Amino acid sequence: MKQATGPERDRGLTLRFRAGGQHFAFSLTAVESVTGYAKLQEFTENAIPPEHEAFAGWLSYRGVKVPVFDLGLFFAGEPTPLLLSSRIMLFTRLHDASERIGLLAADITDTKQESELQGAELLQPEPVLRELMGETP
Figure 1 (tube, rainbow, N blue to C red):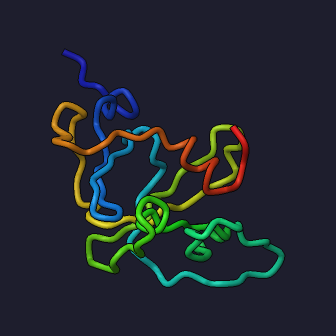
Figure 2 (cartoon, helix red, strand yellow):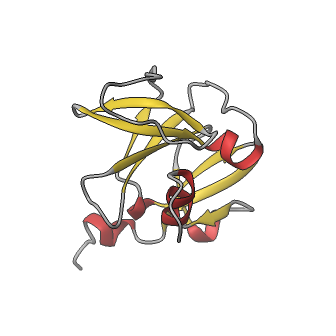
């Protein structure tokens, strides 16, 4: 029997997180990578910060400045607590594979099957990313 690899293996898996006291999840296939919380830069040369109030700062990721948004602020107006389980999820935009966006959230510790989400809302990342970047649908 052939074992699934890559995105096929990850189908149905989700990355669960907490934002503003609520539990959410993204499909694991939508998440490019997850990095531990790092000190974010408030300003960077030659980059205009997004205007959304959830903008947390810039992350230097593989030599590129990536805007990071706080999902606690976005969903509930509360900053994400800086815990050991707080992480930054990195996403590649659908319309531009060179553009990345980071989302900071708490309690990112493991993956779950969609059937095991137990009350967590499964989100599609692109509408969230569009809203954070101030783009119209």
